[in-house]
Image (cartoon, rainbow, N blue to C red; front, side, top):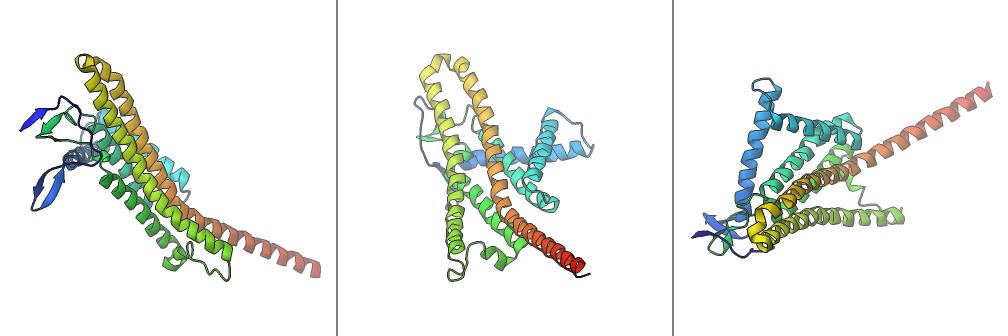
Length: 276
């Protein structure tokens, strides 16, 4: 039985609505699927507009503007053009996905529409499973990119150093392993906490105002729309920085080696000139 809840339903975890072949489908999955469909349509529509097959509109122009700005930001964080082209598709996709899911979670039907005692819809970003999965993708791909740049063994040397030869760097390597796990947790819990707090805020304001709800909620909805873009950008930026750490580490070593080689060559030239 479906109805609108008189009292806001607040739950930290996503609730199962039904199951398919024993696989649970939660209320967050329903909004997530809708978000994927809308986002895929927007991307294909934007592509058609860029290629001149369809007329550009506000949504497609805004998408292109966002993409160009985000791509430029990736290029500023990762100076290598080669790695900018490789990393940008991943982190920019995350930005659009998170923003779309955040904004869909603000729809009036998300929360109040109930099936029994369970909300039918819940924001996908308000599901810790999703935010943890996004963070895991970032951390795993950071390791993949670092291994491709440094080599598998070279990437391992960032974390595992012979303690007998260099005890300080060995301890630093352990700290780096701890840091990777802390990045995973911070990425997932930060996004989840902010999204859940926003949904609870909207639900409580709607419940407390009731009669005046349509007028009172407008500023809060505008604020949450702004916050959704900010949260997506923060996740995008942190993901880019975390991925760049492995690449800039290699770049730093490379510059050090180049500087050392140049210095050695200059010293050799001076010695040769002195001998003459």
